[in-house]
Length: 162
Image (cartoon, rainbow, N blue to C red; front, side, top):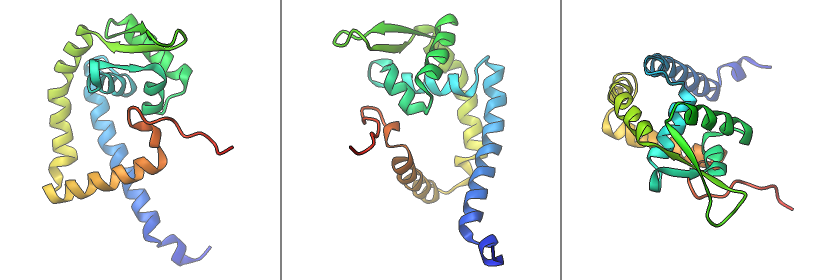
C-alpha cells in the first residue's frame, strides 16, 4: 500500500458519502421514531404511497427496498398488524400478492411527511443550490441504476447470465 492510495479522492468521496448519509439518516430516524416508525417501515410506506394504485407486488417491494423476500414479509406483517398496509391477492397469479397502503397508512404519511421534509430540507437539499441538487440527483440515479437496477418499479431483477 502506498501513501497515494490512502490519499485517493475515491476514498474521500466514499467516506464523505457514508458520513453524510449516516448523519442525515440519524436525524431522520429520530423524527420517524417519534411517529412510531422505523426507517424500513417508512421506506415501504413511501414506496407504496408513490406507486400507481398505492400498491406494489411483494416481489417488487423486496427488490425496491433491497430486502429479502422474508425480510419484506416481516415488514409487511408488522405494517398489517398496525393497520398501515394490507395484502391482496394478485388476480393474474395465484402465487403472487400485492401490498397496499391503507387509509390509516396514508394518514400516518400525512402526519410524518411535513416534519420529515423539513429535516431533509434543513440537513440535505437546503444545503445545495438548485443546480447542485440537480447534478447530485443525476449522479445518484446513475449510481443507483448501476448497482440496483431492480430498484425502479417494473424493472425486472437482474438475473445471472446463462
